[in-house]
Image (cartoon, rainbow, N blue to C red; front, side):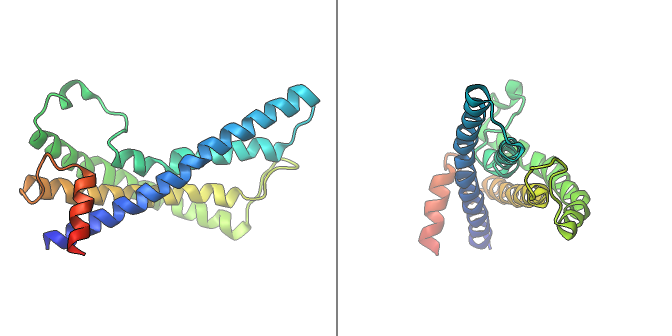
Length: 187
């Protein structure tokens, strides 16, 4: 059973890592488009609403679609005043409780409350309210659902991983890469 759970956690981690890698390119694209906007506006007195909105879409993609990867890499914002001094076992307990009590319920709630919002947008194929804007507001709003789903999945992965650590099935010194390599041997 522990191998199945570890495999599930590994698959979730791979999905979110791939999503994080894809989204990292949006950061580069966002910088290039923003540079283009500035050059066109101040150098040639040209501007397009669609180009400006594309920066907003890319920004939303970076933050909403990259959040689960950030959480996976333990790079999210937290108050480390006490946490960093805890033993690895106590850190795993904090991570497990944080995932169970905060991350999973909040992510589920976000997914539930934004579902109708996104579906309504898709049913209208909602576009920009601005003349010349992008006609893909429904795609932008879909990032909310992808965010919620990826965060729920990553919370499940964290719950599995930290539970296995606390039960002694994964050593505390094992990092995620070692866990992934170990799971590949079992597959």
